[in-house]
Length: 217
Image (tube, rainbow, N blue to C red; front, side, top):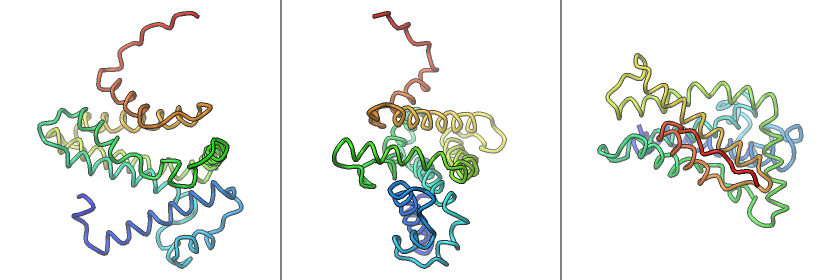
């Protein structure tokens, strides 16, 4: 079900979760993980601490929700793509359309000088290295793949529970996006993410052919 198909109550809950997740990410990157409290996050999102705890068990879970929501939106976009569009064309378009959610550096204050962008990327790396964040990301990984596998199954006439194909496609897409993000952030300076996502998915669609050998310079 896409966002438009959700009831008002569910849309509000989803918006609150996203606001809390965004606030957790921004404050943690800017101040450092240990320097941010749940009280700080709730205040930044203009909600009560009780509201935060109703939605998330802790900061790590709030950060990880961003990834889950991102993949949910990719699945929603995939369901909305034209039925006659080839699967991998539709997947690539869905990822490009919905994946930037919460990843664009400018959304969280990275817009500006190269030095400021560098600080933001370094802060993201430190946040993602936190054990609580890593554990939470692992916890949502399966749920995110299930969301995408269901969309693939609906599009291909397969069964998301019984058939291998939709699960395999979802796992491949999840890995490709993770590798693209890692490659983007590991570069110095960081590389733009959209072209890397396109390249990764195009290579998957082509069956990952072996690249031509590099020539020695």
